[in-house]
Image (tube, rainbow, N blue to C red):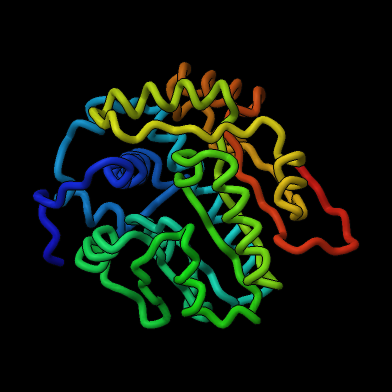
Length: 280
């Protein structure tokens, strides 16, 4: 591992470190809930302590809980299609392979060239993993996949930085490419977006403002001509850790889920006759 603290990113790429620092924080304090051995191994390579200094227990839990729910969606997909494709779009320094058994799957990590370069130095690659340098919106990366296979596309902490029209175009294009495609992504509603932008600015990153707020997932799926499978809050499992979290953290979690400020959206890109919309 040759990555050093001198790896500096501009703009959106700076936010790579926010989820990584959060996974480290939660793995050290609440390993019974979320444990990421690979993230812990990267702690000494993080180039600045500005993120940790400006983070709270709640903001760190928010990021880890997002991954906790997305991990669950990935495991459920692999239970049905263990040899399918799992594609991380805007992969950054995600470390899901240290938490999920994906040995039979075909795993793809897609991100911009400078990010992929640092990712490979920091994390290497699994035997069944392909790193692809490219723009997730350009869709050139799709040429590397067997698109006839069941495919789960995972977009974590990315869409918020773009406008809705561009995201809808991206999803519609992937719909044409992946006949057996499913998509999971995290979203924030309009009110939550205001809070999140304030937090990112506190970390010193003024170039990574967020624009996409999602208030009606079902209506959004209609715009994409896709099928909504489920909408999940972040915190149901974490709130079961009674007595372990600070009171204010628990209050923020409870009302954030209650007011649907953050969510994981799961959709099938191509509709079928089965209507299976659930909310948890």
